[in-house]
Image (tube, rainbow, N blue to C red; front, side):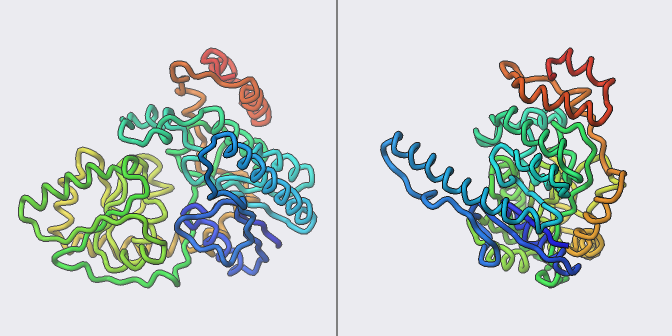
Length: 400
């Protein structure tokens, strides 16, 4: 099978997906249209904007530059899509597709191509829905993350739901979804993560957030300071802006990773730490444990101090969690297994999750309205799924 994979290598997901499919014997092409701050792109086809980093003081010139740059990129992507569609069997999209309006989804389905959509985070997660669904105060998040555009995200989600043969995601980023989806087991090339089981008596602790507000950094730092004042022995490093290779080296030497307190982990960085033998402290989902129940130190805002303290002082507990975590990743996150599961689920009618929050509980935030286009897409999706009983409630809430 010939497989296309694109177009944003967020969290190094595309690297793992490519490795897994190639290990299974399939021919792959990875195309990127967005540069990554952390991951190398030498192995991939790139269609970047030529003047993406060029700045002008004059706002008009900046807008003209951006328009020309996006048009130039779009033309190249159109050409690539046209030339590859006849020879490609499966298209896998993460974060974005070829076209900014996702019209390539319909284009590909008309040509009987299989489509898999991988939702990786905030491209699908609507902050207000997340905060309401999980009773979370998100005031500490940065402005853009917590004041995101409902219609932009709903449009992307609906296009994926209408045209994808398979969607992989997780519950805390599915607040706008209606169609059933599978759990996204993040792919890891295990050979790149040698397992070190050590866990020092005086543990080495790291915290390496990409977004300090959304990761709960302030809370973690308060916990660290409190533990220091109690005289508890450990070494702590706060890490930011390292390349992926540098971060892996640091995690390989650590005993404990303080991961995140808002989103339900472990995400990719935490999984990499687990693969290396580092015990992870993170929030996890309290539901769906039959689907996703990774061995970590599960914390929330109320328990993070107590549980982190206990973990530091209890070396045997850290060893047990670390061993169980590596075993879990070998069974669920090995890139080859992840990709085989994608192929298996493409031919299956079953799904891991049936989302109900949007239909039953979601309410529009004050001052926010859904566009006529998104209402039409939602109605079309309901018709396609045969969920007509949901229409009265959605109309009552002005969601269609």
